[in-house]
Image 1 (cartoon, rainbow, N blue to C red):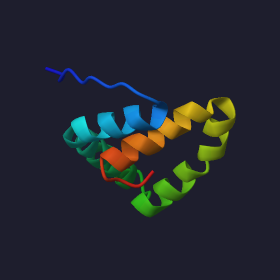
Image 2: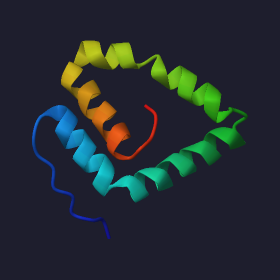
Image 3: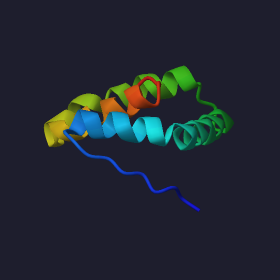
Image 4: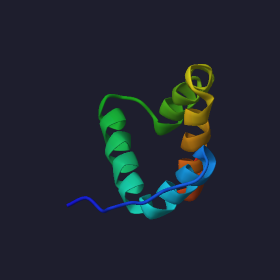
Length: 80
């Protein structure tokens, strides 16, 4: 069963709130992705390096989306 998570505010505030409330779920997802990439021969450092390259494209598409993603990372105490 999925938890009911309530968020409000500007994009950053929504992200921080979600990140705090869903931190455990985010940790589980990160670990699943980490294992999956490792099984395919990629280090987590490489995955993160490549992933960061998408920040500019996300910001160009919708800057508020990147603000919310940064907030989620902050709330979950993770790097984006």
